[in-house]
Length: 296
Ligand code: ASP
Image 1 (cartoon, rainbow, N blue to C red):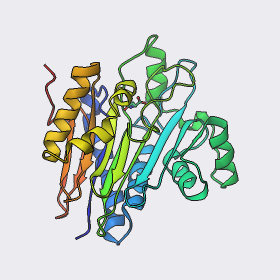
Image 2: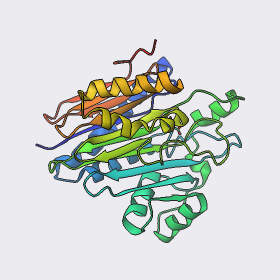
Image 3: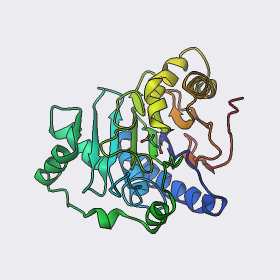
């Protein structure tokens, strides 16, 4: 068995003309991660590779393509976690690194900390020899046109994420985002908060979330769905947890999950969420419109 993997490209507003581009982007990312699993690589390497692929694709709000805050700057958050020893790290408010997910991994492997923010994270990146990029390099034409179009906060949720299980049964997750469009300077969402936007535990599974970060944080969505999956099927746990977030705090979003039996589940309460998965039989699936969960 080569393991399995799923990625998402965010549960935000996706106009019809971008659905193909987003789905294709997810397919390329899931294949990048799966090729690592096939060569006996770890789940951690696979999720990092998949998320880097999405960060490098300007169609998504992470790395290249990150959205602006309300001062027209980029501030990115990312986290990565493995479910065997609970190795986990995150970065927040990073402006000058093209692949925040890899910086988060360095924090995990080269420091005693679980999170570094803004200048501290960038200083650490320099110490690690990670090339510095200017924010200009990360701004995509889409980001520029959104900035010109929106004068108030919009409902964009285009975070990227990946969850994988390798042939040893290790489960890892990674999530990366530019955050919400026109967010306040210094705003940190759910993504770097452990158990909110992502979580991995080999005995429960791995999760990566997307959607309204403040709502995801209030209900600790990633850990909640894993807890729910103890007593119900993975798909039911996804649906119940997202419904709970709507009922309790009126928050919308989506998530992807792999449970230790290798079952892949996903769901969203927004109109669209691009995703792609390759299961333990090597079968590739992609989607963006279904299955949606009703919140009425
Ligand atoms: N959850 C992300 C945040 O609030 C946004 C997203 O998923 O697109 O920062």
